[in-house]
Image 1 (cartoon, helix red, strand yellow):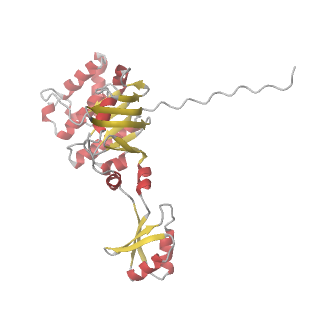
Image 2 (cartoon, rainbow, N blue to C red; image 1 turned 180 degrees about the vertical axis):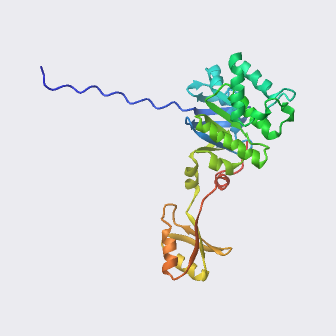
Image 3 (cartoon, rainbow, N blue to C red; image 1 turned 90 degrees about the vertical axis):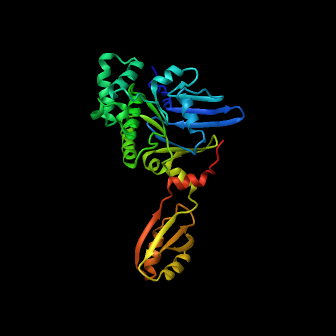
Length: 327
């Protein structure tokens, strides 16, 4: 018998996880107008994904295709592995779609409304009451279960709309402008609910014009204009991509002109300019360690009283990468 034992065969590498959404060459035309132009988009499971674009950029068209309400003219879209055309019924059972404007039955009570949609999804009668109570608690409407929908505020009706799409426990939420028309407090409350849903394992795609909120809410974003994808990836990635150079704001106790001369002498600095009592310092590139700024000021015998990095906001990034074009 051979003393040498043969090594066991290597196990094949695990298959990559199926993304929540995958589109390849997704196109939608209306006569001579192209609403979506060969969109290639991937949304991973667990993402809270911001979909950004001007009115008419193609956001709603994309969400309606993913929700199986609109057929693509060309290309392919898959939701959790299901083709949106061939497997439309399977897609509808794993998604919750909330359009920017949705009708409500204002003469119905909140629980009646949700019970009706629970029945549509064939949730057993014995289970529906608990399901309705659970989703109302999740969206913060437990105290309104007996209220007429017409008596609810706009913010509460938006929460009710979210409760409706959660009634069948979907894995993917497609939310088209869910904070549209809400006051600041209602928007903050809505965003907190979405963060909790992500924590519970939901994948969420949210289109919105309130970019300052998407900046802190989403882990990944896509920017679309005139039906074409401009960027898709981490929020910080698009900031870094657009930042031509790191900007540092400096404030000294006195002798601002002297500080400007000292900073101009540094090879790491591209531009120095006084702005409203502070000094705007633009570094040569985004990766430079800006501790050299403080070192230059202190070694020059000046008193440094303020040093802050200028973070490029999502709104400014959006204005830089888009032209405001629509179809």
